[in-house]
Image (cartoon, rainbow over all chains, first blue to last red; front, side, top):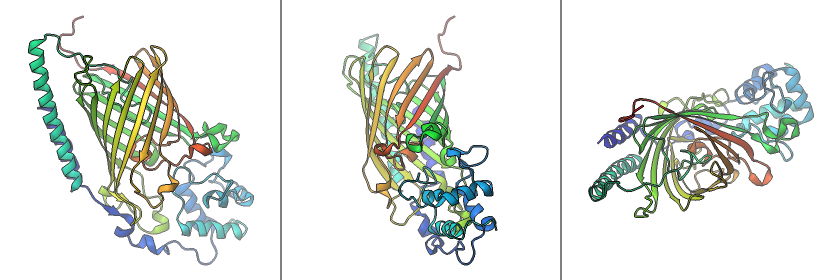
Length: 126
Length: 305
């Protein structure tokens, strides 16, 4: 009897929260437009690049916990991996580089464009 | 909708099965005072490495477990072959409501995932082999608490609705202890994500697993597990790998210490079954461990000091 009560509770929990068959790209078609991040004009370190790093990299690559000896919360740290080609190689999943973000999907195409353009421009501190 | 039906079906059918079994056992008990002897300790713990086993914790036992996975070996010597991280951790509690039903809550660092669920021993193997197998069902509900990492880039928050954060795992485990050294089990996994990324992705995924242990000594055992993913649930199916692991179980007093090598980074079935990224052929393997400690809580009936 106790068993039945628990399973009923479990089923009720599932019912209340609901079960969906959603696809993010259907619910939010803006995701497919891929124009929501700005890749035109000059890419700025402070306005564009740090936003991407903040959301995808700093949990493992900050001064406090520099995985692989890579720190991305200082301009000097980012500039070093940009100059060595490590930054673009890792995020674009090029051969010979660890694929980043580790254990997570690749960055959005427009974020890759931002990083590539910024590195090609000489990784300025702008 | 299909999911509810399945859940209800499983819930009630297992309830009915339990009642039938109980009445059968009661009938048997009236003939034989001792009752059937259930095979104990098919596995040492409620989890083998990543996979759940047929075991639940004992009645009124609160079990605390910490699991940890390091970084991949192929991250190089400077990263001490993954020991520097990135790492993932799961902290969990299991409570034995009775000798067959266990409740679980836990939280994984990867994707900041909370999980809660139940595990119920539907069938238990007996020493006289009248029941040759153990069967255990586990249902888990997961909720990720992370923010959409692409919110700034895409301009939309895919977690705008709370229900988009939820996923569910159903596992049916068939286990048999062949002798004091060898136990094997088959696992069937059904995973549902309320929201997946791409239009061509599937919200449901299925996998079949095999796992087992070979005891070396009374306190030490070699364990292994492998799961084959059965449906093409993602457009990126080929960039994920079947989860596998090989490990060493050590039992020391009330602790179970499990050390292993696995290609899976996460510890929740909803994460490591479909989304394991470590390529075992290219050094995408990591060191991990689980530590389990049981505490007796509450007064046991007839417990005399």
